[in-house]
Amino acid sequence: MTLPRLQLAHITKRYPAVVANSDVSLTVMPGETHAVLGENGAGKSTLMKIIYGSVKPDEGSVMFNGQAVNVRNPQEARALGISMVFQHFSLFDTLTVAENVWLGLDKHLALAEVTRRITAKASEYGLDIDPSRPVHTLSVGEMQRVEIIRALLTDPQLLILDEPTSVLTPQAVTKLFVVLKKLASEGCSILYISHKLHEIRELCTACTVLRGGKVTGVCNPQNETNESLSRLMIGAEPPPLQHRALHTGAVALRVRQLTLAREDQFGVDLEGVSLDVRAGEVVGIAGVSGNGQKELLYALSGEDTRAEPATIELLGQPAARLGPRKRRALGLHFVPEERLGRGAVPTLGLAHNLLLTRSNAVGRGGWIRTGSLAGHANKIIERFKVKAGGPDSAARSLSGGNLQKFIVGREIDADPKVFIVAQPTWGVDVGAAALIRGEILALRDAGCAVLVVSEELDELFEICDRLHVIAKGRLSPSVDRADATVPRIGEWMSGLWDASPVAAKEMAHA
Image 1: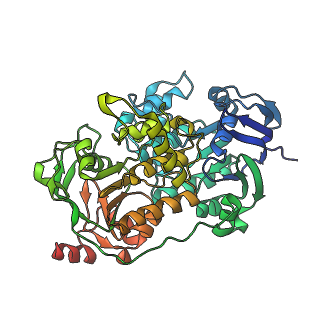
Image 2: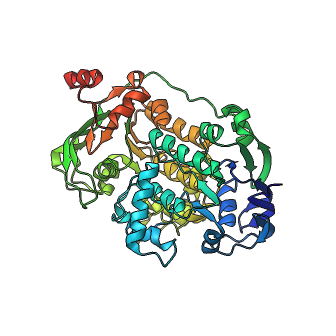
Image 3: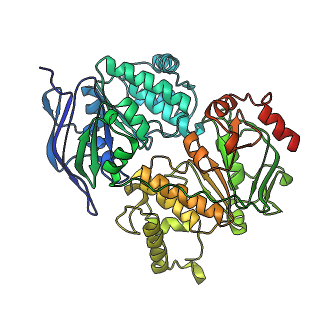
């Protein structure tokens, strides 16, 4: 009789404001790919951290390969054969890729040997990365690759993946699934957290559903539909998006021949980037992570003000040399892809995080009107259904999806004239994704000019009126959503748009 790889019995974890896990039991067999499904804040990540030893349960027991274990820290977990890829990456920005990976491996290994293994593993699994690059120069998608490679290098018996494909392209996801299926066939067990229901149905053979920290169902997802999994997870199917007729106004954001040299040796040069975003439309930018998205977003948000003055216009005014505060005063609001650190200060409460992009709660003499701030934060929490202990909850205490809802809500609530958002639904559940996408379409219908940068092609096809592709710092012509297909956009991601009939047509109209 085969022993279970992992058995959790009656796991409970309480925090002051919430019970994250309540009497949770779960069994994973060798070679099984087991999904843990639930809406944002359901307790999935907390449960995974308990297995990995980074959180201690208040009650319950853990058995691994038939033996009772008390995993006190991640080092002990790795020694047992448990590896985890976190949704929020655990990487040191100032260290290189190789140095970050080295920290989690056998201390007797030389750095040169670790570098060789990274290169080999990355090549084997199609997750190419330069081991010598400092982490602070990587895009979110590239950081994801580092985390996955680091986990694979430990030859795990149990691999925990928390939203592993949230910033990967469809091609990279296909490659990753080949790797995961091979690992499972060799006896490695996989615990898989994702809000992408089609992924769970394709990859997993078992599923435990959490709601409010409790197990509410167990199923084989391959026998389910997306709709039935949604009902198990959130109790209902997300409402369909309402697409109204397109009524565009004047150009609100204009970029003309934006050329910028990279600021570090691992960045990407922007070459002749041009685009228009009109009031009342959603324009999307697709592309493989690390092809200039970060550099373009820095230039558009005002964090990089090196561009020539005439290259960026905001509501008819030259804006290339304006900083973020002056651009906000003109009506531009921005959601970066990095939630913690750029989108929110981890240790500050949600109310005080409003001050990052708001000044109306600061009175004469610089005094903060805390009551007004808390009330405003509460309105955003209610409108965007953010699960939090209240306006004073620290940003880092929220699940990734709930923090994303708050940050997107904070900027939408500002009633922007131009709204730029990167990875709008990264790591959020199907219900929250529908809410955020619906709010973006409502902004568009109210006359806002919206630019969405995302690696989720399904998302871009769902909410955008026109699409561009960015590749190696160059931006393709736009293509109407009706003319966009996955094969065509995938081809353009390699920079192959110059010979395209659609591109030629767009060039002729430019």
